[in-house]
Image 1: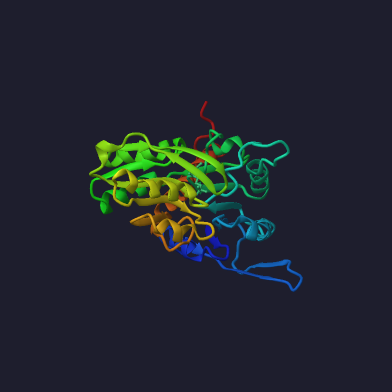
Image 2 (image 1 turned 90 degrees about the horizontal axis):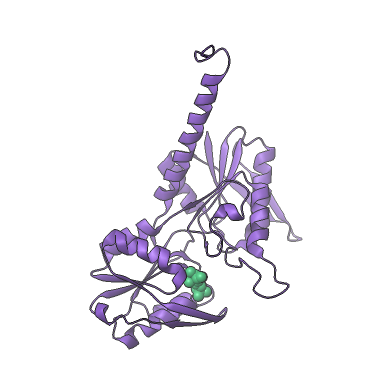
Length: 315
Ligand code: R5P
């Protein structure tokens, strides 16, 4: 039995997951005590169930302690296993000590999550200097890929696209998307001078000028990467681009500012935002269902091998 339990703000995605997977949708009560501490109560029965906590981590510092309390409560109340479904996984970008004394928060965060959950499911985590989530998470951690969904959206909505990645890191998504839809692609060169200070340099894109530029990135966080790339495209003779991102964090007023330079901005629903146009539920449900089937297969095999079964006695 599987219970999908949304943390506050994740109800819509959790409902889509529960509906598509035909799983039970659970309910949680949570509030703040007058002193600011967090109260949590799981209103659904969790005993002997696989409990999936749905909590995207676009604003991790606000609700992380609450998330850990719920995971802990589910376990103490008898959940068979507790999985974190975090379509956007935070704290992946501080992946090394850039300055002496800095905390490598990706590692600290991974340690905290790994000590509270049995399993993690996420979408396109920012794996730049880490080869895989297993390099920092000690629990099974599955990274799903939204590139095919972005590609299908672009193929359906944009005529004659050229797919443009704003930096070398985006090459992986950009090339996958371009090859799926048979479009050309290019990658820009980004130099980041600070959190809000980014430069992008363009290679010669003149052969694609007649095409519709689609800027694709994994994350729009401060938004500066996309703003800078979108701002420069018309100066090079292109029309205003479409911007398509997996994770629309859109901090501060970045969405409003990007709108000044973009024709259209779309994101997946990994973080709830008005730009959401691409639903991740089918991708996540398929991953949970196939992991569930694999586990059932293992249990069946183990039962067959137990003494007293029809297989026992075979030499
Ligand atoms: C770069 O490493 C990523 O792929 C994104 O380009 C970056 O995280 C976007 O950040 P921002 O929106 O703050 O420029």
